[in-house]
Image: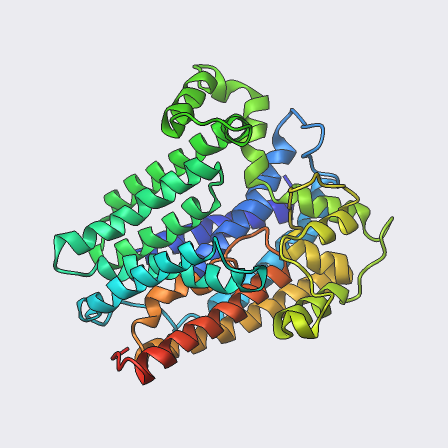
Length: 417
């Protein structure tokens, strides 16, 4: 085990402890983002290096020392800047959100209505309506603070909705992400004990492992047109997958680690650039900024979200139709600027995010309801696999939509938000 590997794993462990300690005290979105990145960029990659079985495709394409000597310093620079600059800026519960329960009901209805409209809207409005549809989770979060049991049931109902929607589509991203965010809001209200936090987090992790075990087979059946009971299919798939020897098989452990390991994407970039594909020298960064700030009618070649173009260009892999993968921010930094430049790139991104976070915390002092909107703002930012365009575009567009909501609700509906 190399020095950078040891340092990286230890710092991820430190991040996990910090995140755990903040649960119930504040809304630890920054700590959550760092923990997800550390697990996927460092821990998942390290697991791949120590596993004896290598997948024919999803394996690390550069040696451990080369990989960790870039990714760990990039992650450390990213994390340390964020933690230092946001140290005194915590989103804490110092306001009685029961005053906002009526607004929570409206937010829930607005989100549901936008969900319905998405089915009939032109493509140019889909992203806007997608952001508005997320208001239903904001509304559910507000209703958790209601004194009425029926209102609080909408909060737990949103989790059931996420579960059934994931089973229907065989896509589990929203379930996992919003499940984490709603848990953090629940903890902020209920101040769980250490034992309760351990039990709930342990149960959540076990459920994520189950999803990873059955996802491929379950998704194949659903996407081929299975019309039966999806819950029964999920449970039967799990029953058929699980065995006493499942976790003693290195091949199974490798399959579970593949989803955790964003490192194989990054190592593929390091193996392909600049040996085959030259450094982009900031091209994707300029494209991301232009695509975020310019509307599509002013930028006819505006980049589409998903990351497929960059993935194929900088790894050399051709993805199948409908398949989308990202090279992550740390991979994009390397693809543009190499090792040292990639570390600087991550530091600059950390500075920008910390500046944004400080502004958000300051705004929450005057507009407390904004606290429950923060998960919506950071939905794509906390994901370790997203590239700059996806993260920046979501953050900016979501900020505009939320700002418009506050402006319209105060000016035209006299909401005291």
